[in-house]
Amino acid sequence: MKFTDLLAKAWQKNNSLLCVGLDPDPAKFPAHLQGQPDAIFRFCAEIADATADFACAFKPQIAYFAAHRAEDQLEALIARIHERHPDIPVILDAKRGDIGSTAEQYAIEAFERYRADAVTVNPYMGRDSVEPWLAYADKGVILLCRTSNAGGSDFQFQKTGSGGTPLYEVVARKVAEEWNATGQCALVVGATFPAELARVRALTGDMPLLVPGIGAQGGDIEATVKAGKTATGTGLMINSSRAILYASKGEDYAAAARQAAQDTRDAINRWR
Image (cartoon, rainbow, N blue to C red; front, side, top):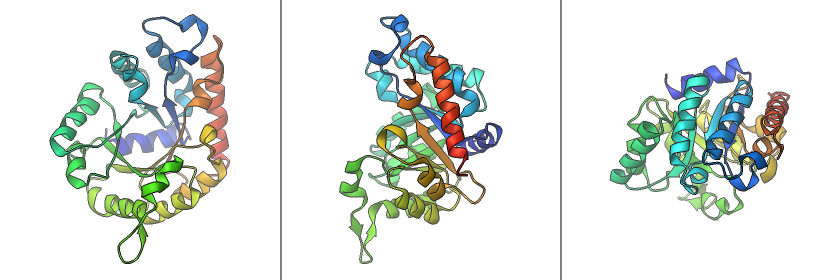
């Protein structure tokens, strides 16, 4: 099934705009998982099982696996999510960006090795660096636009052309009007910038937006939903990672994560 169709189905089935980020840090794991060779897989798999009915997507961050030589556990995790929760898309958060021939290999890694349903991509090297991702028409290509970090303003808000259009708006228009021919694209826009989020929504119609930055980064749920939702009350994948993953440091971590996910999903829904 095409990524955007799978996402739309998850929005409806789970009545949720919540994306559960899977950023496993072994130093924060419960004591009974410390030192276990498959601890990353076990931790993330139990979180996924506990939160699946409150999520519209899962988003494993590749660096948290690769840093601990756990790429095989990432493969196993995505395979398990596909098997147990086939209605929930998996977004591989990799933020890849390179020349075409190298991008082809990264696309093979994301879509054929890891079997992700979508991937985050850096568009700032231009169309030819993105085309290898777009070649997988059933997969989601989620392009960085207005990121949640403070330093994103160093470049993304720079004025361009005679009209002084901010660079992030150029990206939003380019993706929406030229790169999204198969309807597979989405954009990353941070919850920390609700005005820019509203602007991107105005420029891109109903294109899905992946929104990091609520919770630990300071993004406000009400402002985020009001700025980014579509007319039908969907269109968003609002990511929460640490607040869900580390809701408890004890053996009840999965149950605590489930409660945190439900609370976050419900808080989002209050403003839809």
